[in-house]
Image (cartoon, rainbow, N blue to C red; front, top):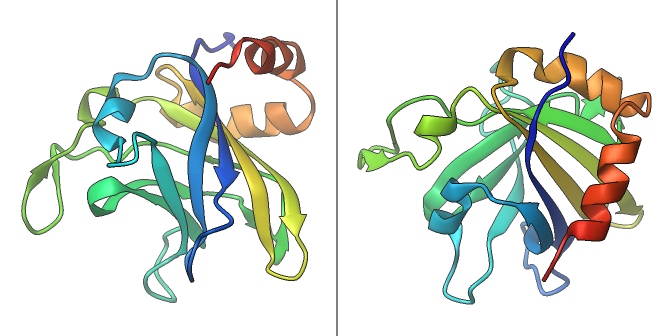
Amino acid sequence: MATPIIRYYAMLVYDTNSKKTPKYSILKDAGYYPPMDTLRGRDGKVSFYLMEKLKEGDKAPAMRLQAKGSINFTGLKDYFIDGMLSGFAYGYPYGEKVFSKDNKPNPFYDYKEDGYLFIVSNVLQEQGIPTSIELIVLEGAKILASTYCKQLLMGGFDEELSTLREQANK
């Protein structure tokens, strides 16, 4: 299996001022992922809401990240394994040209073949939500994202992550 190209890395941190839905903002990042520019809010930050799936019984992952303009950034596959928080997840961008009933242009359409890996850390026990989520964007890795997630779990990206964490700015 070829080593994927890491296109972008971001550290999302829990906003303690979140209301009912946990909000995470990018505190640091490394690399450049053009669609993220479209998600910048009025406060100048890129933020996501950690949300449960909309309908029970559908095939969607139990959790997802939603961004500005109600765009579903990604479902978090394997976020829970056997009812327990796994600490790792994977996903990929929405693949249609437009989203929502208003047919808004999908800023991730040109990147629909990318894969996302997530490391979920330091869960607040009383609330059951993580204090931080790391995002790794792998170029063109959508179909292998689940395999790369297993590799991440086994320490397969430790060196790269160490370097990215040191290089991350903001």
